[in-house]
Amino acid sequence: MGGSKAYPYGSTAAVRGHVLAALGVLKVATADQIHRLTAPGHKDNKAFRNALLDLSRHGLTVSEGSARDGNKLWGLTPLGLDAAAEVLGRPAGEMGSTARGAGRSGAPHAMAVNETIIAITRTPPEPTRPLRRTATAAARPDAETAAVTIPAARAGLPAVPVPSAGFAPAAVAGVGSVSSWSTEVAMALPSAGRNRATVQTDAVLHAPEAGVPVLLFEVDNCTESADVLAAKFDRYRRFFRQKTKDHQGREVPVWRTLYPPTFREGYPPVAVVFNPGIRTGEQALKNRMNRVLDLTREFWSGSWERTGGPGGKSADGYRDYSDAIPLLFTTLPYLQDEGPFGPVWWRCGHREWQTLTDALANGDDIEAWHRRDEERRRRREAEREEAEHRRTTWENKPKDTQPVLPAPPPCERCGRPITGPFGADDAFTPPDGRHCASCRTDLRQQPMTLRQALFGKRPGT
Image 1 (spheres, rainbow, N blue to C red):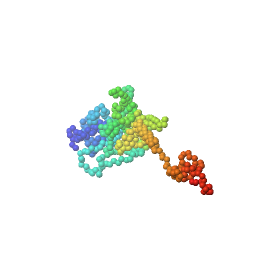
Image 2: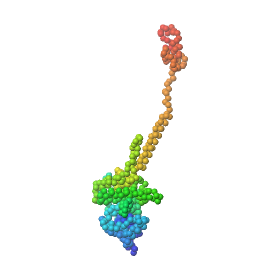
Image 3: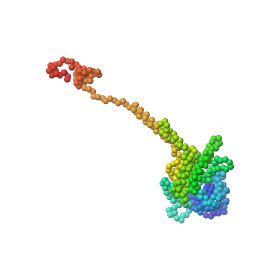
Image 4: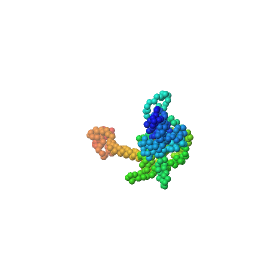
């Protein structure tokens, strides 16, 4: 591709804009990382190398060294930082500083932060001008055709090596875009005197469209001790506890002046991305994560508030996260394999690998208690309604009728029932089954006939 006098390497304005935006966020990166972050649909990173060279002729970019894989590292000059602020639409004061000198040591930490951002963002490849291919897509799979197999949720922590520079994560959905990120964000801590203490976050993601209003990232290359990493969360909590006054004189947290509300109880979540590389094995990584989890327990566990118990109420409770930092663990290989929406997040206090949405949710907070309490109220109401229904049904039940006995035969003498009126004296006139009590009495009082006298029988017997 031929160039012009102003841009002899033939770069386009679009690619130069991608380069400025990427370096404005990442501060220092390789051409390959810029390519994968901003426009993975391009055939290769040659257009980005040309753009970097053209921008360097105008004093906007500078290269001061190479990464440990041999790729040249690029950064912005102060003039380039102003140009990147214009491309990103941010105030120049929010752009931070340039990364001068970072490339002289290979910038291993910056490279891990860049790979984390690439693995989470996963910019979808946009259609580009068709280029003539020397081989068919079936014979040479690339970012557009390669199928990504998403493994099942893991039970352990396998030390998967970091993919090579040609890794293309665009086949799995990502979160946000280049403009959704900020890196090396310094947050001032309360301090006395002229020495202003700060806590510096490696990267901050703003992606409200994905349910992530704000998510802070710490990238750990597993080179420093777990105690050093865990100690950083004490500074985080000191910053989150700071208060200030708003324009109406009301006291509000300082972090709310910097970040949007999370719509969850507690402070903004912090995710630790472990990058074991080839140095840290599976068991060593597990031990490190467990060590950090134990050392930071007071910062993420919250406090248990008990409800119920005496008075016949069942014991229950909830966890108060108002002074807690939601702490998430993941690894760079997991993010590169499955993306941010896979079950690659371990929320400290939870018991399994989860998706990002489930990991950020407080499953045992006061809102969960309110839901359980409402369920208990509904259950009690249903039981009362059932008891009332049973009582009403019993009260309205028709009375049991007495069994109807067959009518007794009439008296053969008078035709009245043989069961005489109540109180009739049957002592001398036992029932005979043929006459009523009155007729039996009359018949007994009649004089005996000759036959009765001879045979000893009374009439009617």
